[in-house]
Length: 411
Ligand SMILES: [Zn+2]
Image (cartoon, rainbow, N blue to C red; front, side, top):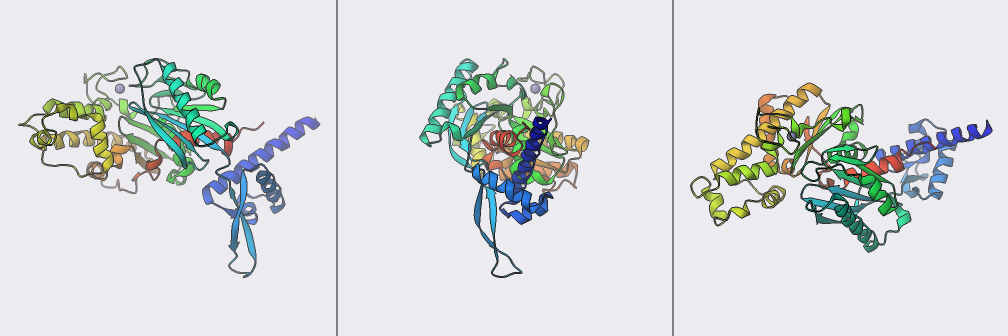
């Protein structure tokens, strides 16, 4: 009995600590007194919790704040020691893989980019990732015991509980037991999640998403993906297949998609599809400006050059009507699908990210199409993510910090 009671008290303490950590993450440094007020615990309890967490190195005292009314009296603030642990964040995308070390706030300590090599067996590529991660930690003098865990994000269908990539469209054709392989290789906890769902979790923990209960996330570039948040939780559909916006069928008997179906949105709007279409009309007659700029070399009409242009934020060259038409058609198709999706879900807001939608000009055209369908869809309702710049590591960091730092499971 006594042992039982002890365990329960310990669980209460873990939960209270979690509440304090989440509050500080949301509001920033606070005094012990204000924390007590916010979370509804006695100041004495909060003081004990804070003392323990300071001893554990999780919290730190941070400066002093002048109280407005009683001049002269100062109170000490406490804040999360975000640098006390580090997260290894891996984002496997169809062309590139991003390997980063981040602090608990999702700030980048150091990172590198490698090519996603789909010509070798998945296990061989995971070995390359393992090696690169170890080098990154070593170069930044991060010790094993400072690593909270490793987060791995990948497109497509992921079974997060078992840590398996079930179908990573355009990357691997088979199931890959990523968690099992990497956990042994890295000797730290590993979480695997779909890239868009992980990014949404990053928004819930670190970004603007914190204010809305029901959100729709849409990523464009290179493929298209989405995630649905309801009541502050990521919606999980049957067999992890929810919100597959990229595989929303828009054309009967259309082109064959990576997923095996035909006529999916991705076959029309992925950067690969756009490049394919531009290449098919590339000529001196139809695309004179592009032809001149590329010196007649069709090889320069590549996904990587297109990505570079989109990311640079350079203005769209409007002189090749045919090219502009292709872009507009893709943007309109995406806008229409999202407007339809919003009609079904009626989210508090829709959050856009990915390099295509981060391009000001593309987003402007995209918004025009959305508003053409529904004039109430303002830029406030369909907004750009504030965490766009952290796209390649914020999601992988969030899935790890949430599970192992902010909301650790009761013992
Ligand atoms: Zn598809």
